[in-house]
Image (cartoon, rainbow, N blue to C red; front, top):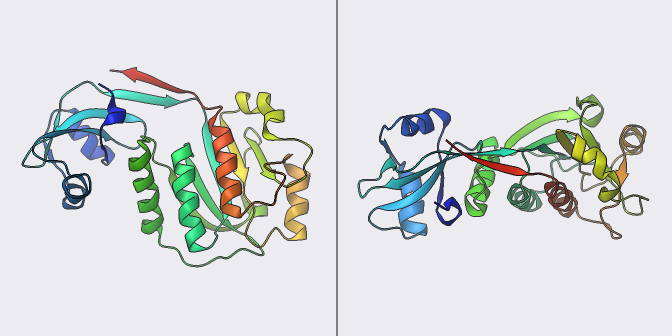
Amino acid sequence: MNTQELPYVFFSDQEYENVLAGNHHIVSAEETRHLRGSLRKKGTFSIALTNGRGHILPCEVTQKNEVILIDKEFIMEKSKKIRLISPLIKKKGLQFLLQKCTETGVDEFHFISSSFDNSREFSQSRLDKIVLEACKQSKNPFLPKVIIQNTPLRELYISEKDFTFWGMPGAEKNLFSFEEQIKRMQTCNFINGPEGGWSPAEENYLKNRFPIVNLSKNVLRAETAAISAMYHLSLYVNVIQKKR
């Protein structure tokens, strides 16, 4: 069964395991409105049920909105983890960044503070909902984690075992110059710049610790730079499908 042709529905681990065990589960009222209203599904129809960690169950939703298992479980595994580290940006740009980076396959958004960022209060539940909707739209069974941490760049822990880079127009090397390092590392991090740019101290810190990559000959908006970097990193991620 080609699950890419089915609507994706995300369940918690416990709910997912209950369906996997053969127990019936009722679809939530919100999800029902989406499936039968927005997607215009009628009667009994098929869905791809996932726990957001690459596990997928082909199921049917009955007329009573019960979820019933109809095939074996598919397990998707990724060869590496992609993490975006970025200061918060303005609301409209942030939503676009979350949507498009989720579609490219980012695994974690880690929002930090910087000297010249546009920090403001954002609802964790709202950001989580944006990435969930983007996963459904793009049929991505890997739900990214969104972490909002008011931590300055210098205080953020980044493992030396990761491949970590940042971008600047005019840099001598592009991302493909680091192909061998990317292939070897299990985690790849891109440190995205704030809308107001890095402070001199922050820029010196980055220059002394991480390689600089030229993402474009032009100066990119914060959201454009993030999307470009995440897309290029995703080219190095292999997804393996198994069936139980």
